[in-house]
Picture 1 (cartoon, rainbow, N blue to C red):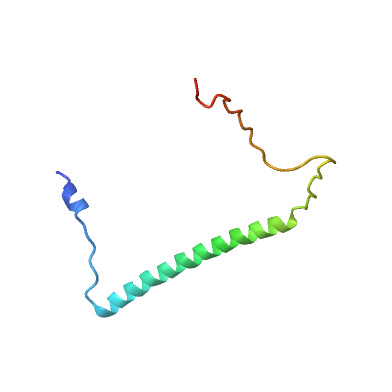
Picture 2 (picture 1 turned 90 degrees about the vertical axis):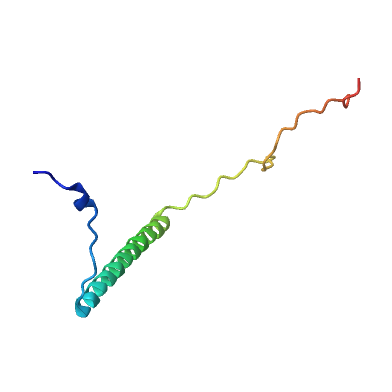
Length: 88
């Protein structure tokens, strides 16, 4: 006895013919979609709430003060240019 793989992979469910059953299946799909959206929103809001509480509970640390005579900033070291300017 052989197994027909073509029949297995060519299966395509169709909509029910009864109008009431068709509406019921549509409402079931819509309810599933709403459930997934609400679940995603609850998870996302929970993550945001956790981050906010964590930020509020963390102790604040005063920034370190620079000692006298220190100038703060970002500096770039520039190499000296060739004094000949390409003349030979």
